Image (tube, rainbow, N blue to C red; front, side, top):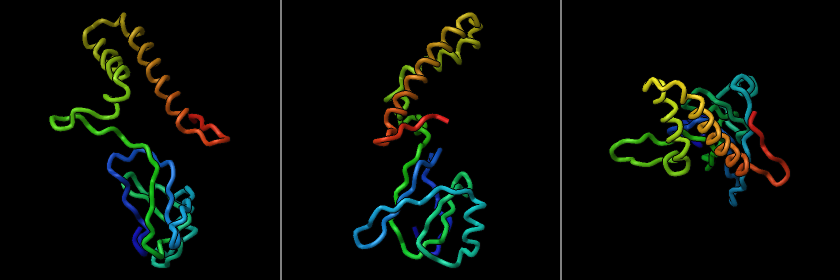
Length: 155
């Protein structure tokens, strides 16, 4: 974070923010920013020129976060977020999907190709297999997002 900066750019391929923490003090104690709406932060801290230790963040737009209050120090920060997989091209031959979900990639491609091939009777078959692949991936994700006492659920 930069001093006096209330708008911070999001990383490339950002999709959804999970949490933002920043370091405070000599020992850089990890301190969470709390998610709030854009309107809440604008009302809470209407003058961007005033600075203090940040407390809240919101989506400013698809490319930026709004921080409130504006940072009074160049705090280091970390963001936990979901990102879109890197696109495949001549240089980048793999991404998360090809490495960790090849079956979903294959069955999704077959599902999309079936109407093009005018083989409509196979659509339910490929849809069921693809849905099963996605359910498996979602269950794996939920297992990774477990706090010691609370399990997050898809909402």
